[in-house]
Length: 126
Length: 452
Image (cartoon, rainbow over all chains, first blue to last red; front, side, top):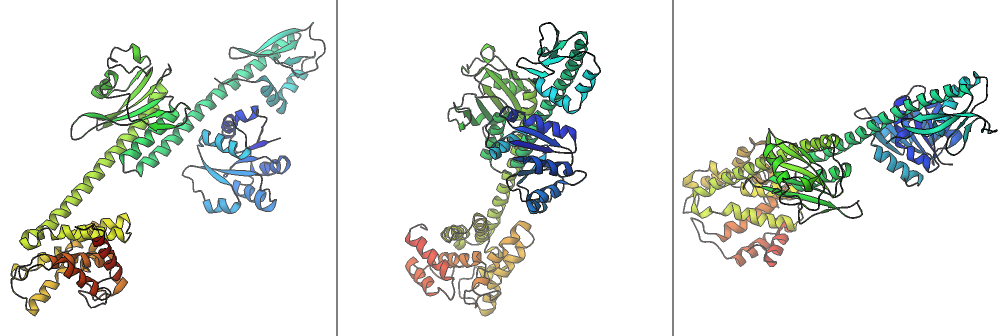
């Protein structure tokens, strides 16, 4: 079963991403959430989601570290990771790239791009 | 319209144990069901039990079966469902705003780096049609020279509703009453029944709804953006607000474009005037700078110089003799041969040129071209005795163009030589006086008759 994981320490961001990706549930995709990096890593290892929307600034393990663990330590290349960074924030593209992230998006995210990207990665048309 | 699925709601509550705790505090068993199946409880005989509605807004999304306590549960779940409905509504609104923010960010970025009208109008109309339902969109601008308003760009959506094509026959024109009204009053308008509007006397038959906003610069109307729909939709305040923001971006971009074009024009006209001052001093050099610029540009194109290098070349060629301002009339206009001293003074015009230009920041980049146009490829030129590739390519090109024009035109002290004679001279000087590549490019230009 295809899964999407949303990781952000702010509940309203998780909610907004869930609402954006709602239509995927009708196509049989399960949407999971996590509120910190530690939780996120555990869910990724247990559930193997196809796409992860991963916030960077989080307590208990930030986004870079989660990404690095998933891609470098556990070598899960099939988990597509989107790093979320706030607009204007000092986003270290190099660091993100080195951590193994597939792509990054700035917040506030463009809902249409989130849907399009998820569609593309999971191979599911909405 | 956000909708609540009872199934999803229940699974959320189950996670937080809320339902279980509340229900376990009730003594009798209850069943929660939506239209399809049982979501909670066991499907034993439900015919004898009462059922109580669960509502989200006006919609019934399920029932709770049981005795009177079930009514309380139904109310509780209804309350939670309505709370969810409100949250979903807020989320939807927020996401719409996120979309808008991203579009505006995208547009600002693109317009800020745009210095041509087509890119500006194309970008704005494309994004506007993406976010506001419409079948066609147009930008009308005032023509500065005629004072008339004209359609600059109109796009139509193709039947597949995904592709846009630029229309050659605009539908929404400045003579339409509604559009004219916006132009005259500077006030935006939504007309959701175009056919019924009395001002629509020029009859746009195809359009059912129109949304039109003015483009303002310092409170003056310089144009409008208008979107039209052939379907009977109702444009609202939200659409107007978004379109107005696009309009603001567009006005700023157009204003910048005008300023930029104006500055560029002023600059070139000034350079030309400066170049003409030299021509004024004697009839013999009349048109010389222009011809050298012309020949140089053709050589530069054959050599594959970039657009910015070509621009520099043109400026340098027009101003290559500006240093002659520092040479006295007696020397400049002398009919007989120059003495050694006089010749040395004349040669200083190359240095004088760079002296004059160094005070104009924008012209500093052409100094090597102006200063070096009398250098020789073999290093025996002046003023700096530069050699080969050390001489700027612009200087090497002007050198050949200048030589050709100078030798073929009459001077105070001699008549002009024939083109064939000078060309053979140039060939002989290839590698010594002149850069061989420039020479062959020049000869190619002559052969292809590009120069005369």
